[in-house]
Length: 173
Image (tube, rainbow, N blue to C red):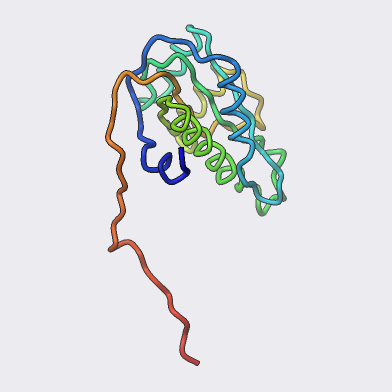
C-alpha cells in the first residue's frame, strides 16, 4: 500500500473481531512507532502492550472515550526523564503523537483496524491509566490505541478544507 493510500484509508475503527494479533505483527507495529521523529532524538516513548482481558476491561473504563472491545491495546506513554531540558520537556507529547500515528498507519497498511483514544491531558484518565498499569511518576500515558481485525468497514476519505489553508508568499522588501 502506498503511504498516501494508508493515510486516506486510516479511519477510527470501533468494532473488532475476537481474533488475536500475532507477536510478529505487534513487533512490526512497535518498530514503526519507534521510527517516528523525536526532538533531539531523545525517543521518550514507552509502549505498554495489553492483551490480558482483565487489564483490557479496566483500560476500556479509564475514560468515556475508550470503551471499545478490541483484542489488543497499545498504551503509548512518554518518559518525562528523557526530555531535552526543563524548557523543552513537553516535546514528549509531539514525539509520542508521531509514534501513535505511525502505529495507526502501519495497522491500516496491514489491513487492521485501529482507534486512537486520548489520555493526556485528561487528568482523571491519566490517573486511572497510571494506576491500572502501575506506571512510575515519570511515565505519562498519552494515548490508548485499540487494534484488531476490523468488524466494520469505512470509506476512505480526506477532510481537506481549502478555507483552512493559508499561504504566505514572499514578503515585499
